Image 1: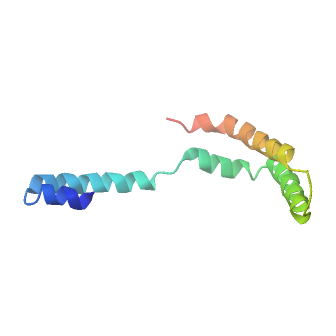
Image 2: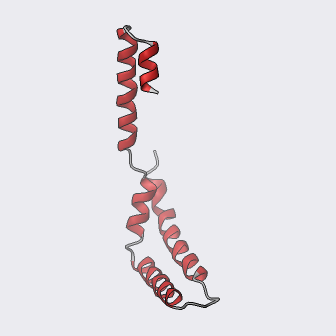
Image 3: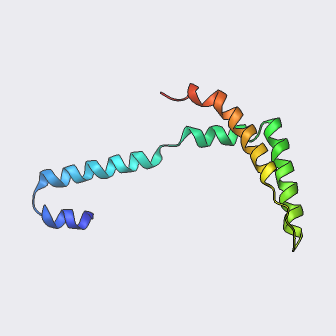
Length: 97
């Protein structure tokens, strides 16, 4: 797409400067970090979430070791996600501008 813009605006220095500014803005946007992801990572380290995650991993190991089973780890997954999201809910909106 950049190549096409250069072909269309070849020789016009004002357009080239505008393209450089657009590229710089795109680079700045790539550096932004989603606060939700960082808060989720911190919340996963809390005691309640660690316990729920251990139960989930134990279940996944148990189910993964069996070749023929009807068991799944849905309950453990929902417990972990609930614990993490409960923690996130209390912290997220303090970071939103």
